[in-house]
Image (cartoon, rainbow, N blue to C red; front, side, top):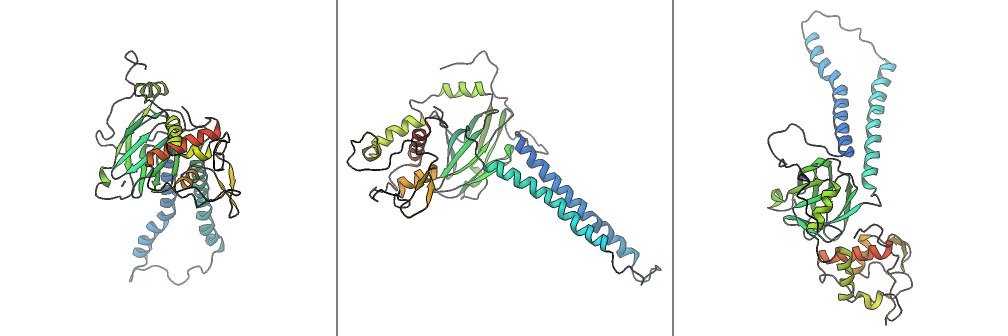
Length: 333
Ligand code: CUA
């Protein structure tokens, strides 16, 4: 436990919605790129629309009935002009398409060394759990300058986690993990919103996103250290739910079941042909719907745990199996 009376307050304190501001904070390079893309594209649209918007009223007035202007000898064709107004906007738009596609791919490619925080959306609150086991509700503390990955699931309807200061948003679904990542570069307090209408309390499903200096984040974690980390809890649950009876290595088990050591991230051959990547969704499905993906060479005898394991416990089991597979690599204690 470390107290930090000597260091200045880790978080500058303006509330997220203090006063009117014309534009939102943007606290990552990605967020700035999103802004540039938005304004750049708006600018392009303005440039492409302006000639029409200006010339239309000009010609309407100039060639109105009764006005004495030359009529009748309008040019019939101008191939260069036609090609220019067709291809020019096409290429200009493609620049934005290319930029947006590049940003999309980067945003959807999860960095391997990211700090993984589990998120549960629920009517109407956000629950967060840090790798060390620390939990919080409607507030999310993260370190500045480090990649953070959110592994998200809903316990009821579809929600959408929106972090406007980072310009990122992703649906949070029941029965399936979704992920998004970010790297916040400025400390402060920002909004967390739900961006998918999810019932009468939707507008109240909001919270505070707190970006702290890494040392302050570490102190914050240390101050509320729980008795067990996610992985330790997962290991206990692995025994408590009887998983270890079949899946533990050592050969004492009655039933032969796939060994889970080193499984994470591998491609698993299936009895029905094909393979599936051992990720969080695969692990979760294998626990709840064990018949969905039968591993080649094994009998379909695992019982389903559907409805018997709380979403939080599942997250801990997934964290434990991930740790088994990667030698604690990506799941920090
Ligand atoms: Cu949750 Cu809207």
